[in-house]
Length: 107
Image (tube, rainbow, N blue to C red; front, side):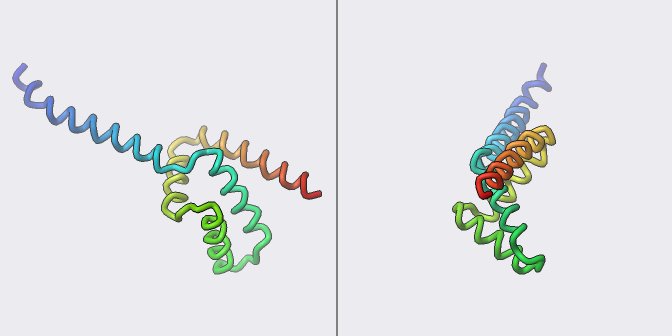
């Protein structure tokens, strides 16, 4: 019983860190609706850009700036989705639907 009392503050600390880290990840990820738009805009912009790496970086910067998103937010959102392959699948389904809709409306 005494050992448990000694470990309790440590256990609370660990629990706090885990909850805090989980809430930070979620807050720092770009909301899915917005990320679908940003991601498809990046794909379309890269499709129309030259295959030069410098151009691709500039295109990415321009798209992120257009949506008022930092590189750090973008990376954190990718990390958020990389943790859950099922989320990626759902996200890609939405992104493909949006891209197809944009292609059909431009015809």
